[in-house]
Length: 243
Image (cartoon, rainbow, N blue to C red; front, side, top):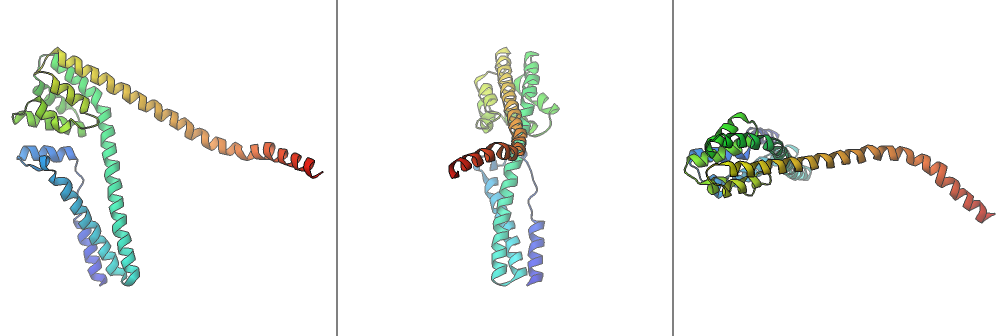
C-alpha cells in the first residue's frame, strides 16, 4: 500500500502542468488553426488536470497512512492542493496584469511614433511587439496573427475587448481606420490615461505604506499612554469614590 501511494505521488508530480501564459496559448492556437480560443477548451482541460493531480496526491497520502487517519489526511491534501493551485494562479495573473499595465504606456508611445511615421497599423503593431518583452508582447503578437489571417480591426481586437488593461486600446483600435494621425492621437490619450491611473495607484500604495509604518509606532506608544494617562485617571476616580 505504501509503495502504491509513493507511485501515485510520483505520477502526480510527473503530470504537474507546466506554467504557460494564456496569451501564449491563445497565440499558439491561432497559429495552429485551433478552435480552443473560441470554445474555451483549455480552461476545462486545465481544471481537469488540476483535479487529477490533486486527487492522485490525496489518494497517495491516504494509501500511505491507511485507515481513517489516512482518509482524513488524503482529503485534506486534496483540498489543500486545490486551494494552493488556485492561489498560485491568482497571484500569477495579478503579476502579469501589473506587468502589462507598466509596459502599456511606453508601448503606446512607440505605436504612436510608428503610426505618425506612416506605417500601417499591423506593421506598426509587429514592430512594437518585436521590441517588447513579457505578456504585452504576446497580446500584440496575437493581434498581429489575427490580422495576418484576414481579420479586421474589430475582429482582431475582440479577444482583448474585455481585458481590464487593454480594453481602452481595443476600443480605440476598433473605432479607428487603417492608420493615420487620428488613431495616433487616440492612442496618445489612452497612454496618458494609463499613466494617470498608474500614478494614482502609486500614491495610494505610498499612503498605505505610511499607515503601516505608523501603526507599529502607535502600538509602541500605547502602553505608555495607558500607564501615564489612563491608569492615573482611573486610580484618582477610584480613590475619590471609595474615599
